Length: 172
Image: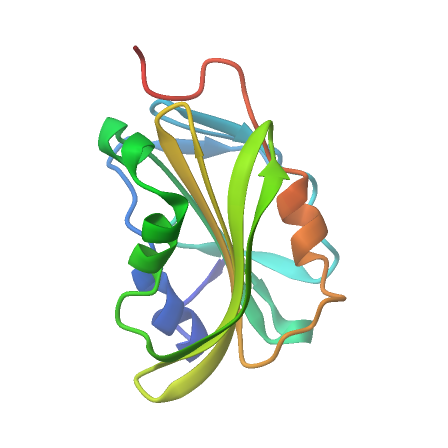
């Protein structure tokens, strides 16, 4: 795992995520932290894992100039929050937002809001590709942040391989 300190683009986007205090485990496919349990496919070639305390998973894709972040949190209040509002929470602090596309898509047996946009943080323009899923009392945020958008980087296919595991979510 690499540290993220040398990546200014990463510093701009880490503000998206706040993670709970329970210790996390990840074996390269299965992530577990408190009530959260999910699986993701193997990352595309060229992605390197970053050591980040404020996101469930984080990767750097140097070849495409991007950072990829995943965060999962389980709070019963989020279950009642519309996907648009959850997405807007991720964009707090961004200026000059230009949404390129926003649509609801099937995702892990539910619907997720998929948003692509350009926005500025501290005057620096960034391209974002964001998926937000709310399922079983948990919210899952996926974001690709970079200076440019490159649809050939494997991000969307990787995100679409995400699956929650049985028992993940808020205990009822």
